[in-house]
Image (cartoon, rainbow, N blue to C red; front, side, top):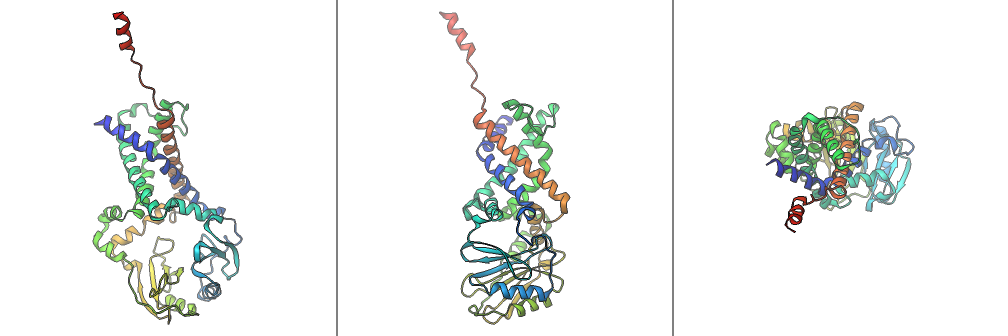
Length: 363
């Protein structure tokens, strides 16, 4: 049984370890994106009052092709404006454009994010990442079981003593058992966001998965056609009246005819950086069609909404970011060295010395 488990651990690691390593590396880089984007205004203090946000919204959404805004927050002091066909811009909170791009390839933070979440392959990439996440979960569990047999030789090293296969395997085994709890957190929360059935299993202890799944379904509203000049100030005013303590997070125009204008807000008690408190407005009249209070969702749905903030270090401050950095770097190291030893440092077949001796003896 142990031999079979060892074989499965090695082969799956050799086949999918590189994907996990690249996800660990890209995820670690994204933990610090707010520090290296390098656009003037990223460190501006947040101005979340209604008048300032409304003025910037009216100015930015009047630009040709504007599709929506991700509003500035306390960590990142610029609004992100979305245009058609992947174009975008960063804007100061006063509404002045600070940087523009025609595609995501002009902004490293955007294509690294796309790789980490989709492997540049959209929904198909998400499936690959989800499978890699489940494989990573298997690695952690099977690795802990296999480590137990050799626990007496444990040595903690940040890097293999030598780049020989035995030394790398020993390093892989001992480093893996140390960071196993951190890897479990990163892998479980990341896989939850990709595979909804897996997420429902994980949130079951917090409440009914069926109730959570139903609550997380996007509400359906019927809206008129998009007005030539929507009254964003009136919409934001109504949203602030409905949720006076919440921050404005994302404004989105309809994706197709009949869809409403959407607004996401974040209440103080929410962990999710962009919140799950949502409002819908008729695209023709600006009338509020409905609102959903994230804090009133079933406990299972609220548990699910905490997966991303934990995974992306949106809570916990610098201490949690350092812990996730250790997790990401370790995953990169474990995955890349596993692939290297499997494909380039595989053990040589044992020489059949006994057979040779028999042949010689018979001659």
